[in-house]
Amino acid sequence: MNEVANLQDRREDNAGDNDASNEPAQSSVITSYVGAVPHNIEAEQQLLGALLTNNDVFDKIASIIAPEHFYDPVHKDIFEKAAERISKNMLASPVTLKAYMEDHVGLQELGGPAYLARLAASAISTYAVRDYAQLIYDLFLRRQLIELGNEIAGSAASGADARDPGEQIVAAEQRLYSLAEQGKGETGFTSFLSAVTQAVLNANAAYERGGGMAGVATKLIDLDKKMGGLHPSDLIILAGRPSMGKTSLATNIAFNIAKSYKKGTLPDGKQGAVEGGVVGFYSLEMSAEQLAARILAEASEISSHKIRQGDMTEEEFRRFVDAAKTLESCPLYIDDTPSIPISQLAARARRLQRTHGLDLLIVDYLQLVRGTSRTEGNRVQEIGEISMGLKAIAKELNIPVIALSQLSRTVESRDDKRPQLSDLRESGSIEQDADVVMFVYRGEYYKEREKPDDDNLEAMEKWMADMERLHAKAEVILGKQRHGPIGTVELSFEAQFTRFGNLAPESYNNFETE
Image 1 (cartoon, helix red, strand yellow):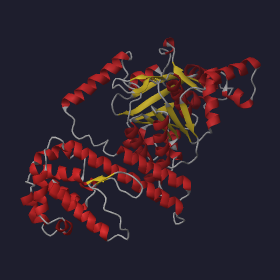
Image 2 (cartoon, one colour):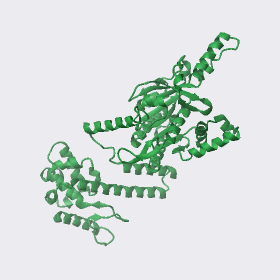
Image 3 (cartoon, helix red, strand yellow):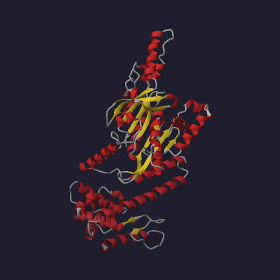
Image 4 (cartoon, one colour):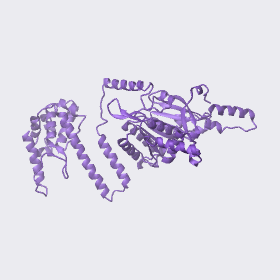
């Protein structure tokens, strides 16, 4: 080991002679301080020596490190060539690698192919190889952090960067988050035992919640039964024509989940939401104040119109203020930035999860999100990028994402105006990326516009009977559900409070579709 280390020391001494400074050469183990780069040559040598001595250790470290994680470029090339041979079930040893690296310029500086033999001979043991691999990887991450910090500083100081400071911050935050998440998604194969255990835990969670739910409960009983709650990593599209109540339903779900939030210890021992959850709401169409007014209308049971006009009695205003005080600690976070790019939307969602937690994300609505500059001018491609981005956020943050979407006008030209999957605007990408697609439909809205002339008594009588049957009722049509059945869920709808709710049991027998 000493001889190998001495070879490296001589190499570093030679490099130091070429510098303008006459400072003594640094030790091969360098700590992080200004001007130094974190690395550990001895750990790299020990790992490579163990690998060349026993190729079986490759399976222990392959999921931890890659060639680019090595600091020394020669060590990087040695590991890369060894990994290439081992992956082909071929022997990687000093003898077999000699033929491939005999003319390697960097290896020649370390003594040529004899360096490979010295690495193998100086390897102490293979039992600590994973520890060496983890150390090499951690030092790589520290070097990446330093590099990223330098780039951020250089970009901020340079006038050549055309991006405004806000865009630079978003880009830096994205890169930093990507660095933090490196390696987390590379889980590889999972044994069937592990998968079965997780399935049993999910079933147990559903059983303990009273059956039917392993996901986050919306508190809309029939919808929860049909969907089993809102499941992590699912992209849920909530679509409908204007005035059907898409935003109202999304707001109701957000409010129901946020107000029932309880923090506690999860089955895996971590702290999190044991009931309800923290909700992030991107309101791209309405301001945060307008959205808050809708929620308060529901909570205080005061008409949205009255709140907007300020036409409230003293008792109603007191009730309104009391509702606001009750809900002020509700973990519901609203972002009303208009026309937000999908990259910035993702960055802010990550930040919210880091700082406050995040159990549900709602985007109102999908068509108001912007794609990247390269997709501008191609609307179908842009929508495809946005829907893929929202699905990626759901998987990355392991939360359900509800994205509202507009429907095309083809609905209006049909006799039966219940929406279908084909009515989704740019439906190809949205339908493909979504785990659940549900439509809001209120027959009362359309029936109201079919009012006959007053002198046609027979038609008027039939119309009034239909209106009574459809009054204050709505349908949520599940057009696609990757993990469950499709069908229709019936809800109540109180227009004055913009509130969806559960139908009273006696209403079910009277509810008939048109």
